[in-house]
Length: 210
Image 1 (spheres, rainbow, N blue to C red):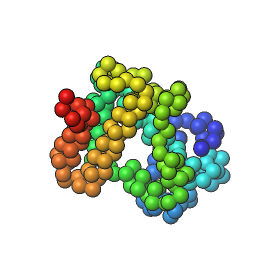
Image 2 (image 1 turned 135 degrees about the vertical axis):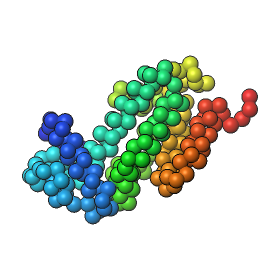
Image 3 (image 1 turned 180 degrees about the vertical axis):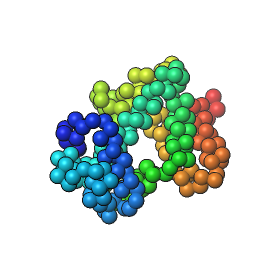
Image 4 (image 1 turned 90 degrees about the horizontal axis):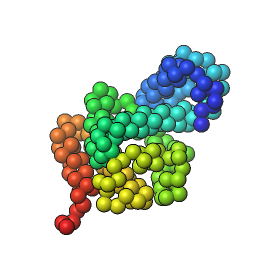
């Protein structure tokens, strides 16, 4: 992970380095990404770079960590505004992602380029799947616990932690699949939106009749 020295930098400086790295990782596949280009874009020295990060993976970890925090904050604000409606949160997350992609697909390119490098899936823990279960929910720093504490549990047929994690997994999968489809076929945005909301309706009401 990035060093404590990096986290002590002013927020504006951290974001300058983040944006410089994003531009580079979006430009080329991960193995071809240049640290020299990153430090040039960020206007920092090579020596400074290595007091902040161990390698390129460290930079990517910060990018994903920071992006994840931003999305988590977005979800929290939405849940506070909508009375804890989890399905509305998924819908809001989807629409926000679409609006961002209409401006730029840079982060999508970053994800594609980073994970074109086979070892990154293992490095970032994607081979093991998501942390889940009641034990994970006991961790106060676990992002799903942060969301679980803010939702209106009376809306759920089952409000257990395990059931909540299943709903979160399915809802986020629907969001990611829809984003992927939009990325491939932006001209079909209405169809993508309809399919996404169809998946949310199935999650909300179930596939079987009562």
